[in-house]
View (cartoon, rainbow, N blue to C red):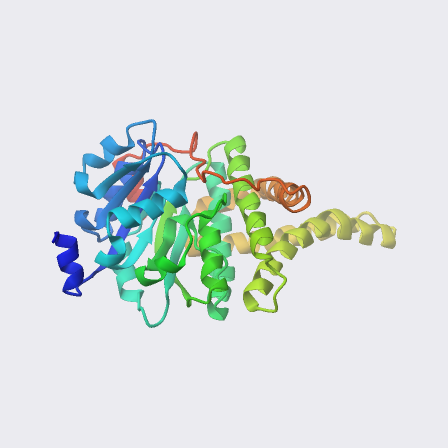
Length: 372
């Protein structure tokens, strides 16, 4: 009988493990592992599954972790790699909780200690932390604003009502007892969203929000990569809407998802239909810039609050180009809706990885700045 089997027989399971699935992550995987160690985990509780990378991901991971904590599988997508790692490492038998994080993560100080304090098997079956953008370029400033407002406001509200709609890839933590009820063969561009919906649809339990546990993630550095990532998110969202018929049931979760769709639609109509129509009815086109100025003042007020909450003055810089990226997101949202819901595209299984061109190496100072 091996060590794992003996441990299971005696009924002893460790508290928390971290699984890092990755594909071509040689630039960042070592920094992520180092960050996890600094945030309160031991080496023996950190596992890496390499989804057939074409670079030196495994070699970089082996510089820090034991070979027995690293698995290389045939390239088949993130969800499949996670499923294989859970079985290979006997994570359900060994641990009570499993945290799955993206390979480009930098964890805040005491991240895993915070998680351990907040995880209670009687209260929840899963938990999410707070995703924040790493300090970076102008796109990172915009993302930091979006992340801060979205989570401090909307995710807190979702948490209060028990309708958290997505467990983001960098901060998803599962009670291992529920993993057997989840299908990792999601055929989805956004497997984290699919798994979240499964928890709600199968009524497995509550998802808890732990805002003090902050995970810093890398953002795109070019408009092209920004659009690719945003389109993947939107297409994955509408794949889930179609697959699970979201919004068609009289449940709070469906209402929450419906709000997300209507919010983007309303924003588009507000700027490009409602405001112009009001100006036309009033026969006063000067009302249009006044309305836009009012909207901009509201956005600026939110930016100030986000700056104070995140302690990142660079968020204010995003106010100079906020509408450009916001409008681009709305257009991509509409395009994804047409492609997936109307044209019925993206029905085939997908690999779920789009990291090429988005990763960059971090030095020690960058790690310290992001984690602080």
